[in-house]
Image (cartoon, rainbow, N blue to C red; front, side, top):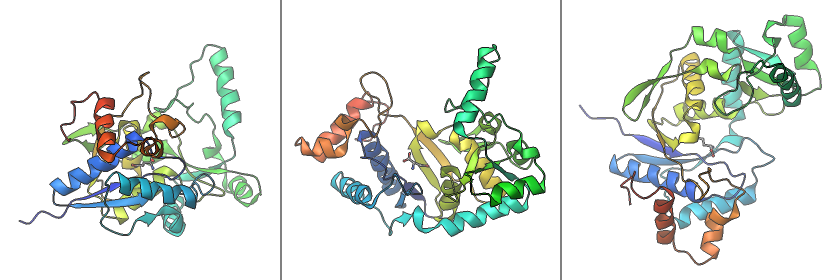
Length: 294
Ligand code: GLU
């Protein structure tokens, strides 16, 4: 039997300068795709149309070409596909799995600080943010409509308890099944009044639409996969195989950030480094050995 062609993708957000960690992720995707005789796609995750700018996108594409990343099809730009995300969100509305929420981040922080102050350790999600404490999921139709029709900001949240009734709880990670823990995330945000889609929603919709068979991305997104598999189940989408790779850390053992200029590809290039030097720096950042890729 002929195996279907495998499809990989690198999915950066042009909201800052790419750094060594992005270079590693991009090149690992490319290498994995080439070894599998598959395709490697580029997806531009620019739903945050304020922080993601055309200039940063242009710079990102130049940096990717410079380090030798290649993509096999026209890149998919998420900001051009809001209607598709909206239609997936509509499916969840129809199934009664999402609800509008006006509780702001600062209100949540204040509420949780009060609980913490009386010694009740409020649960944090895997990213360290307080789990949504509200009960707006219980609002009736008319209260929901008045939120939706008001001009105040609101978010659309997934009712995770209802959702997991319908969902399965595992995914394929580097060849073995692992258990998902979606309840640890609580009622995640899937859209906002002004942005009809969140990262979680766009990511699963696009992975399915682009026929992605293999998601290779950093370990910082490992726990988000629990949300992704729930959405895949609810929306009837095929779940790809995942491999969450090690992160390149700075000398203090911290994750690299887009605001840290010293590891940006642009800065390294301007300092006279070659793409090969960047690969060598990546190996040092990875403590050399775990991946025998280069
Ligand atoms: N856009 C995300 C980032 O830049 C990556 C998303 C993914 O690979 O699923 O961190």
